[in-house]
Image (tube, rainbow, N blue to C red; front, side):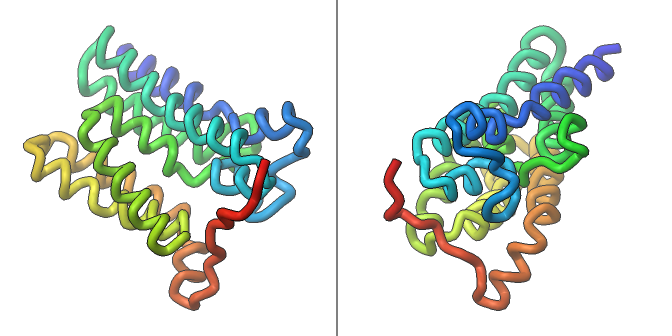
Length: 196
């Protein structure tokens, strides 16, 4: 029964399409009709509205952290772990949007903070360093996620190696088109000149 609630709560939280809801509320239209067609913060940024993109990033992270913290507190750490993975599935495959959601980076960050906050801080530090160096969100997310299981092990949390590896695999699968463009040198860069 605990497993069922962990999956249900995690999936429902993760499936809330904040990027779509916020852009529509702000009068920016359907974010799925621009850029990559994704509902995540990176594509929301392509609307030119940095505040809405930042809010999307925060809320997408929050919907990953909340189910982990809830289930860890009221049930077990293992239930929290399962809820976090379910939140990732909900974000990537939301039933409300015909199972076409985001790519999972922001939500995975929230899950990391919920599981073990130092991992979340390291992920942010790596992402920011790579994003500013290369100005490519996808590259930053791919590299940061790939290194997370190693950091979990080095920080004395071998129990988190498998869940963080599963999260990294999901992120890499969802970024397969980006990986193809990175290999070809065609991946678009973050435009820091937009104002909103």
